[in-house]
Length: 254
Picture 1 (tube, rainbow, N blue to C red):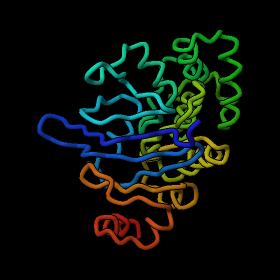
Picture 2: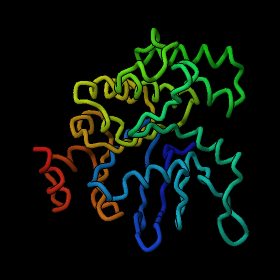
Picture 3: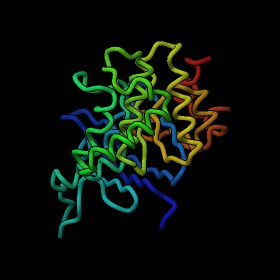
Picture 4: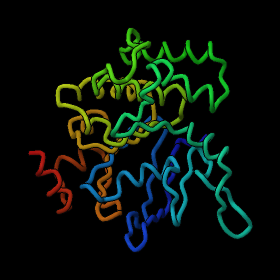
């Protein structure tokens, strides 16, 4: 088994005449946390969504655990996988969005058990037991029968994390998971993410939480104009940035 879980090779993505990803290549090793930084429009979210095949890339390829994401090799070119295969592969990479995207008509518990039952065919009793365990882990066991509208933003985001974890993913993708939260609620979500990192969960995190990146990340990537401009350890990237775009970006937080 390779120690590299995620391989991204020369990935391009555009919308009409607008190029968003311009030859992005990187790797994420098992058990490591990679934080992706950059200004709005730099391609961070598109990259993350491409890893989960929520965006179809125009060129290049992405592999998770050695398996091509969203495509399989034909005789002359890559061919998109059937929807059922794409759904299976998405379950290997749980994604947590800026907005919580919980089903408002379902209880917290039902939100967490829906995908394991529908996608993996898990028996309801097993799905419920796993969901209650995960809700306890994110500190929301007592809220299992509540509806999302009765929860704070931080609580809803923790439910979203539990929902993603319910699929037992190999990789967790976080797209600015604290950006929609009031400042006093950010810490409770970051605490859950710190615990996941400590347990060895492989994570790609698009974030502006520089303190979190310094503390938790194994590697930091700075994107600019759809390209990876700088990559390295948190100390190398954040302590003394030599790249002018990165220096300007970091100056906003000083």
